[in-house]
Image (cartoon, rainbow, N blue to C red; front, side, top):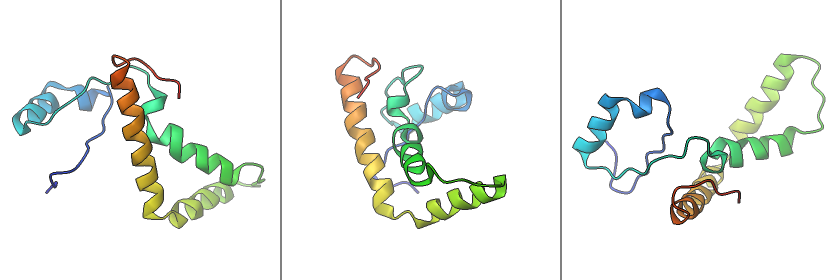
Length: 108
């Protein structure tokens, strides 16, 4: 079960915004903020994961798709928990900026 200090991140995708999902969130008494329609500044894969993957694999040449997939898999396997924690910390500060800005997009 989820502990007391957790964050559930979801966007405006249909399963996340469906009535049944919203009802459960209300039943659990969870606080929810409206997610701006297009906010790459609030998507950890966009600002943290892919940026670092591009930095690590950028400039390398792969002769086959399998080689590229293996390179990405090796990179993902090498990540430490601190990498995920760093991305989460960045998300918190980015979300704070968004909320302080009335829920509007924040460039950086």
